[in-house]
Image (cartoon, rainbow, N blue to C red; front, side, top):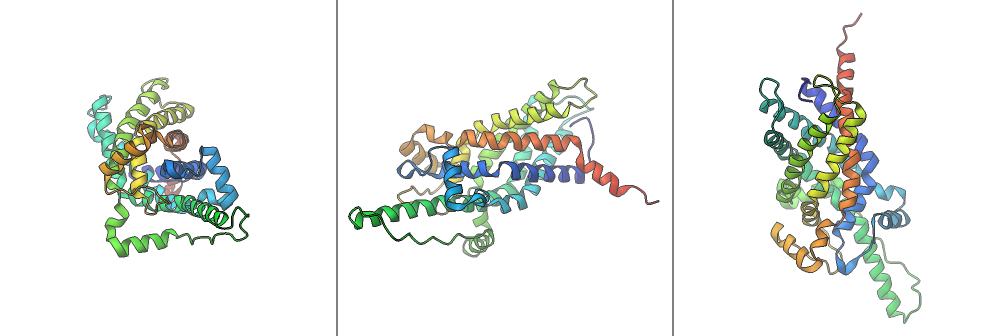
Length: 323
């Protein structure tokens, strides 16, 4: 990636295409990750990722697994484009005379990329989490209402179902947050997002670059696409698991609705302290395997699209002189 100059529009288009393909493929797993991370020990609705997806399909239908996908598909293009293009930009600025970047400089470039992307990532995640977790909250309330009705009827099976709570849309959530909190409402959890995304990029980009380098036939040639794909998968999974504790804290802070008897949090440290005290250190790894399953193909696909140069081909066709 460092040897070849690629135009900024091409970088942005490649990142956007990669993001759209990746999100479409892995979004149900991301939904399961959010719901597993948000449930607390007192009110466990799901035992595992597969249990979460099965229950989601039963209660909300197949498309229930894609709640919040529209937000992601809308904003993932600028988010992935900024991340990939910023890393490329910082690597280019930090390299001298085409020499290979040192590990500290690779990490610095990744840090810059992670910092830039939160401009889009924070509001995207804020809205996505509300939509993804709405089904869990509704299912929990329905279950508790049914149990209460069963107890009131002396063990007789309840004949009435609890009314379904209306689920907000992304547009309604955005308007409400802007009206009540201003632009800051969309950036709730910004600190936790930075704590997740900056270390992620610091780990991911240098690890990917070095793994990808191992598959190059020579220093002048690019690695085969399958090497780039595998390098993206391995680096993405490793980075995702490494920063999962920050992702758990971020998810909890950005969730506006709570289930019955679930903790509320006043800030990043308060959230981390309560999770540790009430749920134990293992709670910081909730959804870690889901996140690894999401990130691995997401970044594998991203790197393949980026290195195939789909955007360069499209731009080349558009720029061909008319006969």
